[in-house]
Length: 534
Image (cartoon, rainbow, N blue to C red):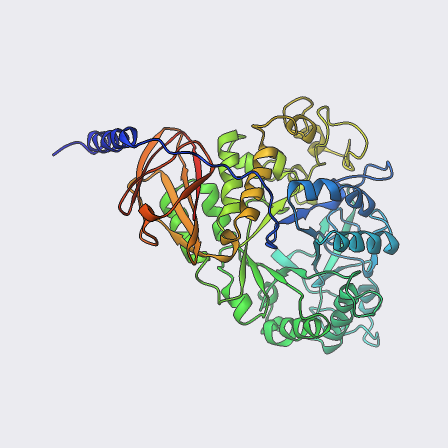
């Protein structure tokens, strides 16, 4: 019996010989950006994006000033992190849901931003977390030790005297900020009818701030942070899909039926199907798919992708991402390997679903794992650093709000002249930035990627991931070599008779040879080949 390695070498040799025997064919490249209406979300950590007034804090006017940049990139929608008042830099754990954090600007700035986003044909989504409040919140201050408070049932307490607030996630009672400020935090009683009514009014306000029914000044949907049917496994807060989330969403859809809401599953190992079937959201985050993409394991990725895109009911969507504000940067997970970063970009944008790009991802910003600095929200600053606009990481708009505040600054990933900045990457045709632009352009020029059916394609190589999106007589095929070695592969294709179709090359340099229902191709190390079938 032949050794497996030798057998594989002989098989690949046969494939390669067949490739070279094929007659050369013309390679066509799509250069135009065609608007097809499919979304590309930009998940922006606004405090770290662009500073408009020189205080080193990214703000709403700064985001407004950079809308040209986002549209040039190909973004169609913007997801804001929370903007409500909070002592914490990430603006979770609010001290007043009704007020915009003054560091971001005021209501006029917000309305101006939203109207301009809509004027450009773009959408805006708002991240909301109203499950917790800090000790500064009016509800907390009024209800503590006061059974006569009008907010007495707005907050969960451990005791009948309302002197000990219930813990929050991870059974914590508070959190220390990166700047040394500590606040007690309590869980909101989502079973209270008054709390539900308050949330309905609050969310409605952001949908239509001036109440004129036109929505040019309102959000196009929400990200529900840490959404759970049983909040943090507290026995008082069970069945929340039926008693809180579904009534809230139904009330919002009465105001604007076009809203699109996404749930952040508290359990990142969840497929999220119960959130759409029982919680009535429109989208969920493809957490398992994110993990599979980072694995660079063909079989795992194939299995998860096939499940992710078939498990949700028709009309519901997966938000496909490889980074967010709660995890290490993708570049960190692949040790800043440029070829691997580009594979992440291709999968993020070509697999289908609704792609979400975390700010700075498009220039390969380098984050880290959580720091070992104790229980403080400073641990995540390395993955939430200032967007690198300039080669030397200094200049107008740099949002280095955390400068000289602790070890997260002492070990900052902002390194002058390291090749990771928009200024350095824009003129470089081989940069991560320009690769992202190309992948977005391919996606938008081929609506089948967002509207067509997903299908894994069987192939002969354990290191090559192949799939297609197809609808009617059109398809896009993607073949990605997940290894650092060149790989020969035969791809089985049964959807169309390829000998009667025309293959257009959208990315890469290798044109497959076709024999009946087989595509034979030799992929370079970490090669990304994309073909359109007409």
